[in-house]
Amino acid sequence: MKNLAFLTGVITVSFLIFTIAFCQFETSFTIMNILFIIGNFLIVLMVYRVLKSMTTTSKTFNDWYEDQPKMKD
Image (cartoon, rainbow, N blue to C red; front, side, top):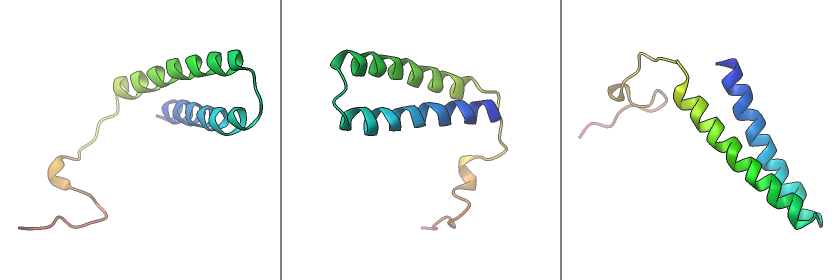
């Protein structure tokens, strides 16, 4: 799980850097386009790793949210 959290963090930070830094400065269109394409592959990799991770939980939908009590009708 630690590797999965690290991967998710790295991909998120790379997108933040991409959107904030490269869009503010006058970076060439080719570099921005290449980084955007790489970012799309990183998102696919992140989603694949999250869906294929072998984490299990004992929680069900009946547990609802732990920080809010379930509203009764």
